[in-house]
Amino acid sequence: MFNETQVTFRGWIGTDVTLRDVAGGQQVATFRVATRSRRMQDGEWIDGPTTWHTVKAWNNLARHVAESLVSGQPVLVHGKLVADTWTRDDGTAVTSYAVVASSVGHDLVHGTSVFRRPESITAAPMTPAVEAVVEAADQPSVAAGAPQAA
Image (cartoon, rainbow, N blue to C red; front, side, top):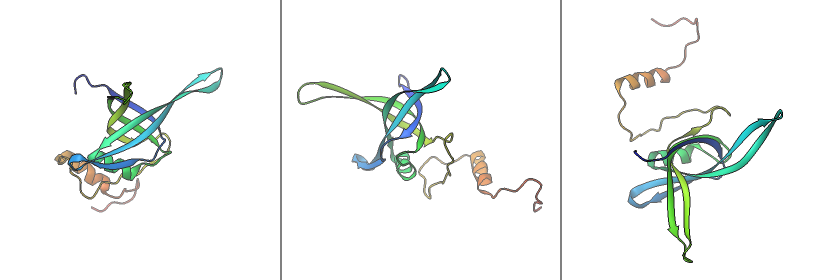
């Protein structure tokens, strides 16, 4: 974690999410996100240039991204900025940058979303405190002032 460049940004998904199987039984999802700055000038909103970011998500996050996100949706992305450098056949050095995501989600400024826990999850077990919060969240809401069973 030391000396890694962490980035967080919001934008709009501009491509379909592709999910691929790679060596060792891992999966990677790749998609592009467009970002654009806006500022107020003389009482009008002025859009800055569009910047495109390649995002890669691995394994559980890759599967969840592929099942949850489609082109045109607003997202928040957090992850590590990585550089991929190679040499073309003509000897030209090329560097491209991507964000290896640790978190991806819908940007709720632009709409609502519904969370669904997968049937089988391979994450670390929850602590008792977190289990209690999850169980409480799964219970139907009771309207304010409605009678409750004792």
